[in-house]
Image 1 (cartoon, chains in turn cyan, red):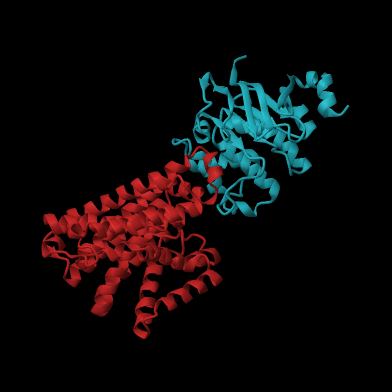
Image 2 (cartoon, helix red, strand yellow):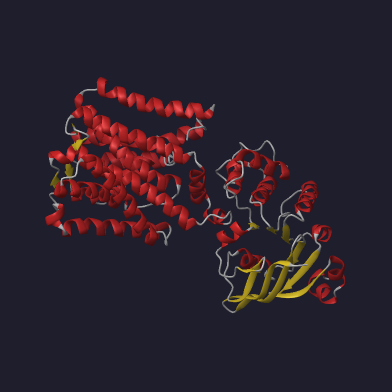
Length: 234
Length: 313
């Protein structure tokens, strides 16, 4: 299957530290691809490179065949690569409606009200639209963040630890939500919760010390000796 | 419902100001004309500072660009008021665009300093070209420059109406911007720039648009001040005229549509009252500001909106 995002030889150093070190990475159309690895393995840095929040020292990134290595983050969002923050980043002093409307109105032709309500309904936040976003419960703020990502109508949605801080019941709903997004969108998921990863992912990439340790199906990753030693701790 | 209430409020303010010219003694009518023009300037400042979060210390430059953009053409080339106002509007917008292209590469304190330096450079430029600009002494505009479609703006009636016309136009434009998609993006930039970027908005572009809009308002106000009161001078390019609109906006409520007018009104009369008592009238201004920062940091209308009237734009 054709790769939607195709990264080759991505490298980014912070001083002497190789945060991302010669990474090749493919995100295929319609897949849910999980990115896992120990703390400090370079996961957030890697998606920072893919979303354009950071510039690589070396390497190239192609999106749907087009070279986007030099493209700034906001232009990548316009192409269809949406990013939701690891640490919840909403507009806390604006209403929930305005938060989502900002994402919706990126697509100039979208009818504002209907699209905002549709996005809120999808994450289960219907009826919260008039509330000031900063007063939402933490779990709901996470869902709002996801709703903003959805409302962009992205072709690729990068979710950085989306289930962090969600209650067990909310996680089940969240998994169903992510399942419903493919194959229209492709998902790149950074996640620590192994149950979520194993249930959702069609493929997994394991990072360690800034390098790709393994890529494959959940079953293959589970069976991989190197991964077990480095990460799963078996 | 909310929309109807909002329109009613703003149109009522305009109607009240229209009635004021028949109800108030001439001294206060002249003051109100001045306040309305200064409020246009403050509304412009509010677009940059209150809505977009750009704390500029150099708006005197845009005000002066408008004032001289219109004033020099009327003084040297005999332009009448209407083309002079349009020239001032354009001069303010272009100056803001030029400054923005450079200054918006910085943020926060650096942005304050860079805008301050640009404004100082503008002030010194006016002094440097003294033979043309009148330097310190300024220029008294000729009667032809103060005539608008045959009416002389040195007369109280037409002057008040022109000030009211400009003020109303600016107020409704401001309201339109605040309630538009652009307004929402400007506020987003103020609240969380990084998140806005990751929603696909280029911070530089949005801020530049906001600054140019702000410059258009400021330039129009500067040109209007010149043609309505017949004088253009370098004192309007000093730091004081960068600080004043900020005070008006802080007092009335940053990020509110009527706040700049309310702030200009109160501050004008506070200074008027205090300078009748003492030559150290800035002491009163300082005391008012300290009180404001301590007890109502969101300004009068900002506080009212927070406590009681959530629908206030």
